[in-house]
Length: 73
Image (cartoon, rainbow, N blue to C red; front, side, top):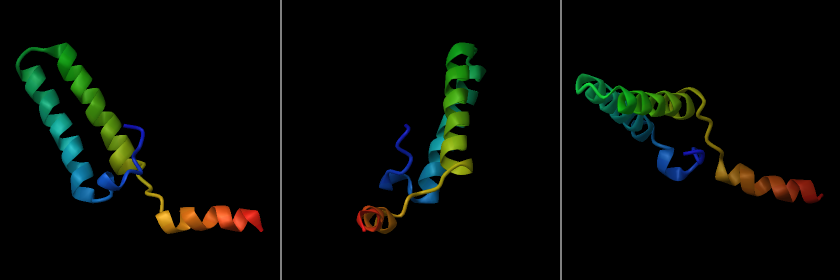
């Protein structure tokens, strides 16, 4: 999950969907009385919200390709 720069995560709707699915899973587990799994899903949702919504800065592939050439000069 540390590869948040993967092209799959570029559309905002996919990142929101991942966080919402984890939140719904968390609520479902707590509703069923499974505190451990609810905490685990809640932690994944919180980490996903931090990584994919609050701290998301995609790298531009064109800028990344140009940078090594500029360093060579």
